Length: 348
Image (cartoon, helix red, strand yellow):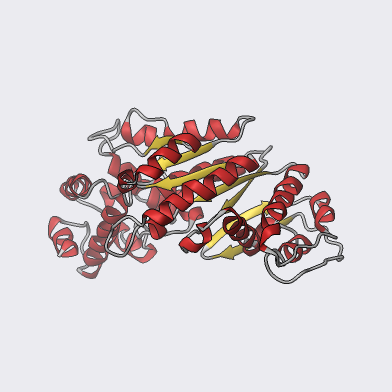
């Protein structure tokens, strides 16, 4: 089997929303851009004693989610790791109608991400914003792994955390949501854990189907969600889009609550060639394909893909999807390498 066929079968360049896969295939932007130290800035801030709240700013497909996923992976891989990353989906703008609504939404997120807690903690939290629940079962689970929406993330737990939650009750009253959330955060901290809230799908709820800004949803994020997390003193990483700049209320609030880091552009060249080649190499390796880009693509194709990147507002996700499509076409033609005509057909 040649390298092209292997890359085709592995779908090594296909887009994904799985943060584990995104982290594994991510190449640091300091290497790709030649100037920025994006990942190091985020990593070091989150390792600091004070809570860090950052927006990772960039256009569609530029690398916001993979940057976040890689930083989270690097943090949780440390021997003294304390961070508990809570991947928050706010696809429904109603979750941001007010601070209490957002508190309930975040509690539901914690409840739904079972890999974070031992089973009796999970059972207690399930009652937040719903029916009253009391849990007495002893639980000594210290490690669990579960897939949630294609996200497989490991968490480590201590018995002290389980015992703290064993007799808690959470009721259905919305007005108790904020205090319930504070209790969850406090218990995590008592157990030596550090909550890190990740919001990487803001484009899904703040943009309408036609690409316009849903200002009410966007303002809800910065007026309700971000301030509440600041009040709780938890770390926050939120992906934001340049199109949000048209909303004055968002601009005012985000400058108050968030520190901006921007996804840099790929440089035209890096030490070992085009940066896109380094990205493709990492994707191949992450999928178990022991080959380099030059064993799959003709050099002209790589230059054309990099041109496509700049022509499409730095949408790396689209470029890699088109690269995968050209690989699939080349494999169907039993070609040794992806040639320009394969890419042309993939773009058609």
